[in-house]
Image 1 (cartoon, helix red, strand yellow):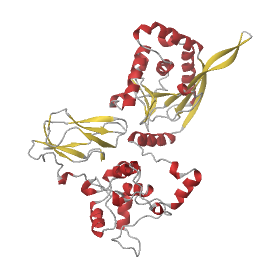
Image 2 (image 1 turned 120 degrees about the vertical axis):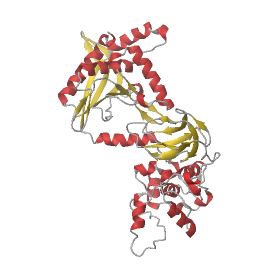
Image 3 (image 1 turned 30 degrees about the horizontal axis):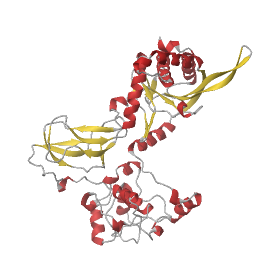
Length: 450
């Protein structure tokens, strides 16, 4: 008998959500069989069995956030299988938030230790309001002893702290809910389901914090607002972008004459018409960036705390907007690939990103990133670094600009590109030289295709 634990499926993963069980208790499994789907900070991944046997226990329910290394299932010879029922002793261990534990350990003077305190609307951060990590692990928070005490006292239903706060914010009548968590515990998804079903209880508005509600109504009407629960991709994106802001960085902008490149693109696509391949401006940019990085290895680098890591390969991350959030699939060895190869690969990676089917290898290993908002009509912007990469290029739209040629005023398409640089890994002169040569490659695009 052996335990199946939550694996580390990405370089930034600290925990994963068991999204869906694909094998039931009692099902035979072979080594390599996919027994569940795991939603990570990047995508939905497969959880495979590492040995032959029978799935005897499912230790966590679907939708549960599980830290790396914690057991999620047990595979054995079948003698311990429960005929499809999850054993009572297989319920996920729940962890008590630190703030809640501290309140229990140090009750206020004169307070009744047996009473469960409820934060007031005027108080600071609530003991029930978890940190970012605790919020991701909503279905795992709380303490069974507190639940038992609360149930025996008859004062309030058993529920996780995040679920209680969410219910309070949305005026949910807890008496109308039936918990789906361990031992009937009310968890976040129960509250969210009640919100979607319009289960707000009349007459409970007074229980919600009055001051924030009044401010929201004064600002434009709380009834028209919608609270959108963050998915894991957006949570991790927020965390990484916050970390990015701590990096000392600077910006360099150049204006590119795009007349020749646009003409070359039209000619190339005409020649490829029979193949079904279509080259975009962004494909040219990715290839040009890769060639410029090959000329400037100092720009193809990462800060490594006590050293600078110069990468031997040129792997370009391409920012892709999806409904779930921003993802950055990586075109590996872009400097060695043809324009047609890059175009086909970007189309494939972007499709996988939007469908949530990117593999781990397709999202890791980037050495530089490109973010293009030109298709949205954005003329110029600055992109935030994607640590540990030392640079990211923000690409605007190619717009007509009046230029004087041979005494005549003509329109020439110009495009602004802005380089964001990690100043720890690259100085101003290095970044400027890279951007100068990148501009030159884009303005003489035959260098891209030969």
